[in-house]
Length: 306
Image 1 (tube, one colour):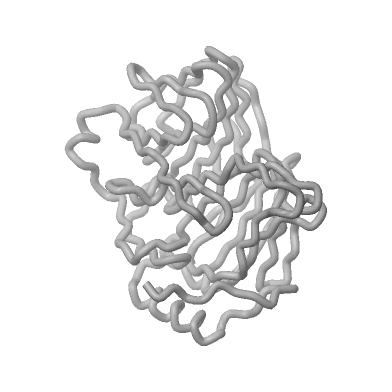
Image 2 (image 1 turned 135 degrees about the horizontal axis):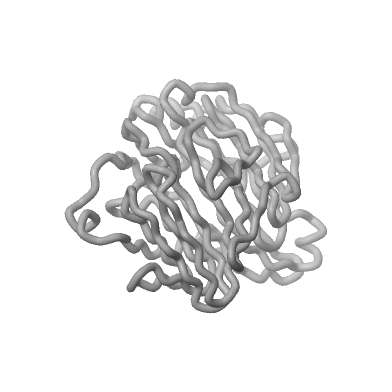
């Protein structure tokens, strides 16, 4: 992923945030080798929102027949990866032996703990036919006391996620709880993660149910007070305030947040941890081939030189 070691701590807010009800973060394009993502988190001034420490908007990208995504095996520690697709499919393989195709509306929740490796590729039938891929890939940091837990993987089909419609807004609770919904996805930290689709002109009251909350516009536009957010923008909301969201045309947005992390996190490449030492150990383990291999894979991504 090419992220340098940085200290991610979301205690405290800058002067500008205290004055304004929202703060805007614009996604930055990143080329991951044949496909483009829009990276939202971490961002300057906003390294985390609740437990969310990494947030990528994948696509929408149309692959021609014979083309697709090939993310070779790579490692993670002390985080959980969350894959959620709007269109297309991906095949997940990991070092626990799991092989799972993820389709729109499903949730792949992979807990790295002390260490796991996985790959993500376009499934063979979709590659042969060509497909449009579109979705969100995010990481949530594991809280203190759980960073070295045993790795785990759970797949939740779309039908397992609770939904409700509020005044023209369809809410799907991906993880955590809010809006009188609770997801079956098992989390280790108070979390909010919602897929919200708006009819044109629909409004939604976003209550202050969590310490930190944000909204990311996947498509369309959302007005919050006198501010309007367009596709590819994240609004970090003022804590303790209820906000009214209004769609400008057909709109899809992700609502995310949770309890503020009390201790800092460091991030380097695909590693997240509360200490530099954990990251250095993980780097050495991957460089020395000490992670378990990924089922059915012979390739891997080498440790970056920077």
